[in-house]
Image (cartoon, rainbow, N blue to C red; front, side, top):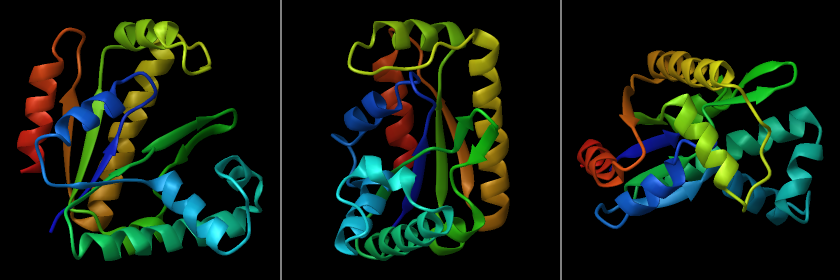
Length: 185
């Protein structure tokens, strides 16, 4: 069984790409934040996902580690692809989406980064009426994708996983899906 981690900054099209690829591969799709929410609700710590970020940092770390363990256990029975953030761009700087206590539990086989050109991401964000996103300049988007690359290689160094970048450009969805499917096989 394989355990893959899929990431992409908002507007990269990672969700669209993943949903299409899942039609062609035998993987269970798990969203890291959803698993954390399930655990916190089971433990009667929160009532909903939005309450997670209001918990003390230490509590969040404990839930992160428990989520990684639950995901790893699931990957013993099924191929699993985890949808999560590689890095989070906060006002005080970039935060690792997969800190060491998560990686130690998770031990993924593969990291897949979904990327697009900054101008494509800007256009997608502006036209997505379902989300309220911060406006960023092309150089800020480029930096976030570069930070994801650096972080994913650090994660791979710690876990022995491989890293694959799949480009998801406008009007090339089928080609991008095919590349993702081939990586997951």
